[in-house]
Amino acid sequence: MTHGDQAKKNPDDRLVTPEGEEIDQSLLGTVKIDPDAYTNTSKNPDQLASTKYAIAGLLYLLVRERSIRVLAVLTVGVVLAGLWLGISLMGWALLVITLGMVWVTECLNTAIEAVIDIAAPEPHPLAKVGKDVAASATFISVIVFLLVVVLLLLPSAVRRWGW
Amino acid sequence: MTTERKPNKVVDQLTSTMKIDPDEYSPVTSSNRVSSLGYALAGWLYMLRRQKNTRIQAVASVVVFALALWLQIDFTGLAVLVLTITIVWMAEFLNAAVEAVCNLATSDIHPMAKVARDVASAAVLLGVVASVIIGLLIMGPPLLERLNLIG
Image 1 (tube, rainbow over the protein chains, first blue to last red):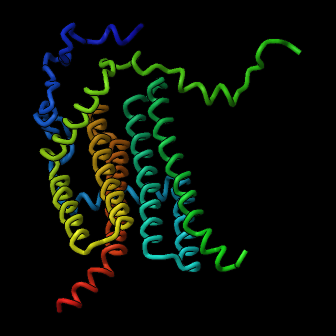
Image 2 (image 1 turned 120 degrees about the vertical axis):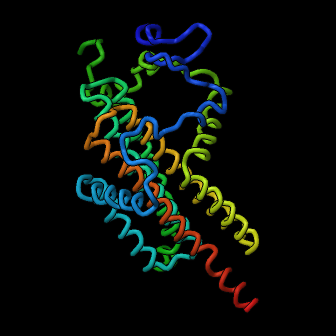
């Protein structure tokens, strides 16, 4: 064993930072940590500013990530197919939630990739784990999305063409 | 033909990640399931205490659920609503986790930190947009009906 043993871990399971600050591990310990004490960005941005950042992030995704553009085309295609085939309100609700899930995982995957690139400019095994596992989250959500689309649209398509 | 296994590039690529042992690189070794649940609760309390958005979201979730019960939405509708609310919560929590990791990775200003934060908050925005659409789809028609009956 390598890193695990060298790490600063006391025998009685206490967590102490290199600066000597002890981390409270009780249920209420996390609440005591003030995130603003560790951030360099503006503290408590208002709702409008938060929304602006979110839209800036979306624009970044659409310009820089090819998979997001594919997803955007897919989204439009599925919505058009849904309109044409005429699915129920509940069907629409399910379609929107699945689409939302795919978009959310895709965004978080890109965000995690960016953080990993900051944390590890050099190749690192855990960077590979982080990126691969985040990518498998998007993979799973896309498979579920395709399943839901088939389940929702196939019955209407069959009814329309009467196979 | 040789008895040795031919090196297969695809198989090697696919199995390379699972050969990495995360415990080798972590200062904290992952402990039992009970304490994992404890960490999850601690994270939840942290979010409620430190993030104003999460408190607003908690109130909104309760209001939406109460409204759905009042409108007597059927079980399928309730299931979809609960799923929707959960996705927004998950996006919000993962966004906070990404922000924490950002601050951990660098205390300097870094362009990729901006990308990570903005893109993670885009996930929350998309989750909220999706949940508003679903709320209207599921609760809109019964709500209009109910209001007409009263008005």
